[in-house]
Image 1: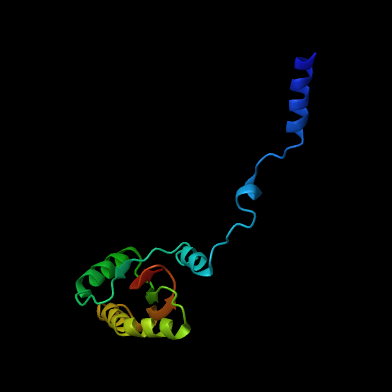
Image 2 (image 1 turned 60 degrees about the vertical axis):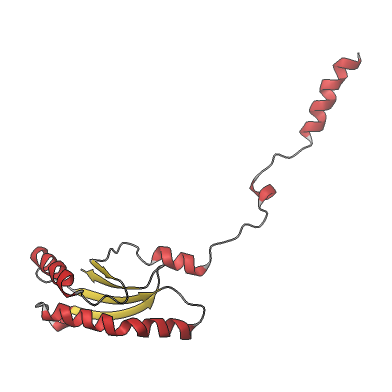
Length: 140
């Protein structure tokens, strides 16, 4: 008689337990920080035609080749030259990092204009996004 009640008591004890779930291991999961969210949204649907790393001086020929190929596909193409740095801890540091890339970005924009693109179809922008610093050239 003793053996017949043991499984019943065991099932009764287990029925009072809750199954482990997500809340068992991480009751309050950590959310993504804004820098990570901005980095993933920075390139939503946009792929740079050319990426130039900071300190690069010999960018004229690769940019010229890329511009010629883009104009061969679409003669009325517009170009956007963007200086981009990762988000810094303070706005002052972000501005300082972007100002360090401003000269190279302006030189790239002048190079695109020298390759035959009208000035009104070349824009120069700067923003803090992504994971690495660089000059990105977009075409549309």
